[in-house]
Image (cartoon, rainbow, N blue to C red; front, side, top):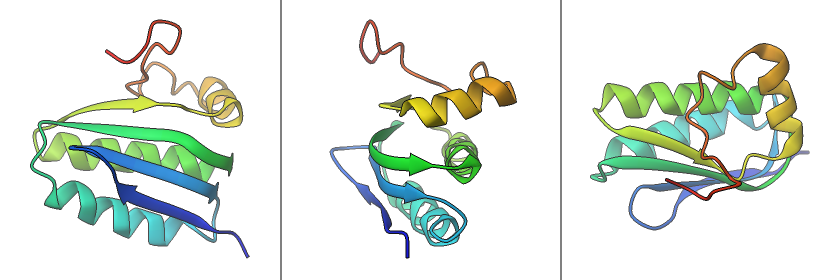
Length: 108
């Protein structure tokens, strides 16, 4: 069975870890939505640095978390996206949709 977690870090941080797939996606979606809703931060920073593996479910989660944050009037920044997620995003045409930090220059 796959294991994955989403938890809050420093002010406004949403930390994703583990394997993001169809087994872990629904619970992560509910937990992330609740964490974003309870946060008082002006920006949500989604850190994917501890993601071990991701299917397209991982991108779906990022899109849903982005939508949740924007609905709450918050900016979003995604950091630490693993190469497998980035490749799925590139093939899907989502690189321009997701608010990815330019990791060659650091988070904005």
